[in-house]
Image (cartoon, rainbow, N blue to C red):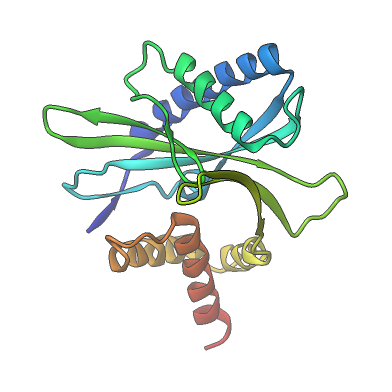
Length: 215
């Protein structure tokens, strides 16, 4: 069963993570002339941070690192990923986080309780960019195809309409409580699956919206 993590517990962790990101920003600018913004996404953004009660995997955060200026490494996916990993490694010095891991679609860091052999918390940082032409139906994210040993920026479409549905739900009495309860129910149902939190959130919103306005 999933439980919600109290804000008093995860808020200091978010602050710590964003200090780490700012350190990475400084290094990427000073060494390569590359600049990026960061954006908390997923369950952390919506104050729906969860973990399995009594489990070994803790809770997680997800950030998008949105490239603005490429500096001297324009669209070179492998160089960009490796440079970010090196910058995170430097930024993590003196923190409880493990060395950054080159995951398929992100850079992953963790805090591990070695005595109890469990993960306390983790964070994934996805490197993305938006096209300059004004296209607003998606973005490109840096993907490491480990089977082919190829790094590339891959287009991902954006699911429009979710925020509009949330706004309608919040206009009803107890709207957010319905979303929160549905989200936790879906987390329990999908325990052990690889379904991402943002997908479950979108599903929860759609379920509540359909129950409220189409039944």
